[in-house]
Image: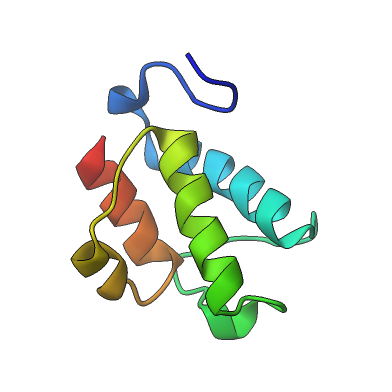
Length: 90
């Protein structure tokens, strides 16, 4: 299993997804003070621009061993939507 991936993703609870996603956000944005909530958007995170969005999506795909389509990504409005998408892909 590649580094950074979780084993047994299929049975992950929402709290586990948020915990792992928080680690990904901390890594991508290099900000350990970020606290994720369902209503958090790009406007709420300093340095969340189009390039960091791409890094974030790739990092989330790697961390959860999932793949998102362009349509999946285009429908995301906030962190809650991302968590729902991750859950649906597991």
